[in-house]
Length: 388
Image (cartoon, rainbow, N blue to C red):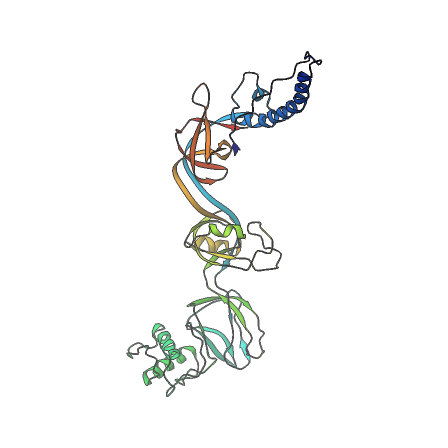
């Protein structure tokens, strides 16, 4: 953008035929030797501003000699949108380590990529299944007849009811371990081929928030002791997109904001911004999607996809994320190079709709992709002055 100014008036040059015998005229000449060069400098400094402010002049003045060419561009009416593109990754959602709560020797482990649903065996310890159940609270004690009431009992009963093992029993999730609860437990144990004790021992169940999980990584070996270390990492079965914006891009990610994801095969999937987890910095790397130098964690944004079919076909892979920003519809749009910064504040454009282009003050709206939304005494199709 260019500041619109008026050029300085040139000083009258000193004549070569002055009477040097007149002291007064001599003093005038000496003053002229000082003042005239200063005025010339002022004129030269103002010539660039004059060429910018009035490039249409062709009367043999400074603009005609300017080395900067100018052109006219029509004012457009249309839509303007601010968006950014970043490199991201298509990954399985919510990686979670599985830590045994009991003891024993690991006698069976699932394969990477296996999907395990609530009520199914996740792994084995001492030849007995460790079953996946749904719940936010991990087990911390054996559950059976006579145990004190508690929310862990209610969580177990919810699973028994949902898995169909309480059918016809009238069991309700009420934090009490009743004889009816024990019957439902025996039914569940029978379906697993386990001993029908009516009790749920610590370590025989893994409570996770997900109703089904995908095994991402197995970190333990068969024959190893089930201890406090993670035996595997599981994820949700849905794919999401993660992206790590630079600090100066974080403001573009709005809660529930929209994003368009281009998959590795060239197809696109719409998505919604679910979460933004701020890191402590970007490690000095301001490149979009950059990983930084590892000095400090990056902010991570997670985008959930509207549909999984295309994403599942592509599988975990690099993607391109287009984050949709503000949009201005039915807007008057000019290149930002057409804007002139006015001395009194604000901006204007030179509109060439007559013999001499006129300066029109405008108000700025959305600016994106080197284009600006304007409002003012300007019509669509009008020609505005810009440098080539």
